[in-house]
Image (cartoon, rainbow, N blue to C red; front, top):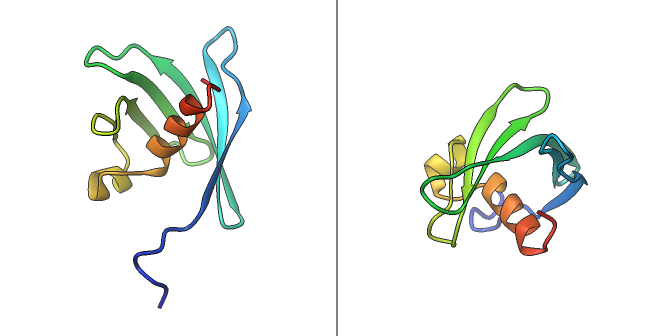
Length: 100
């Protein structure tokens, strides 16, 4: 059994910067599996930056909010269960590196 305290390393890559339509693409790689997401920044009336994120191939759509570390949220099951997820961490990393 793997150590429950160890998290799998993740890599995020901005595949396409948001264009004139505001739509961009990023990819998250965990081990050898890469998942692509289409995203668009949307207004966020409660603070922070809001994004609509769609995982390609599955039809899953999440509303994600990136604020200070205590004010982030996502509608995915991972965030709802653990208070953190790859969508929040990935978008926060892209913002932190000045890519969004």
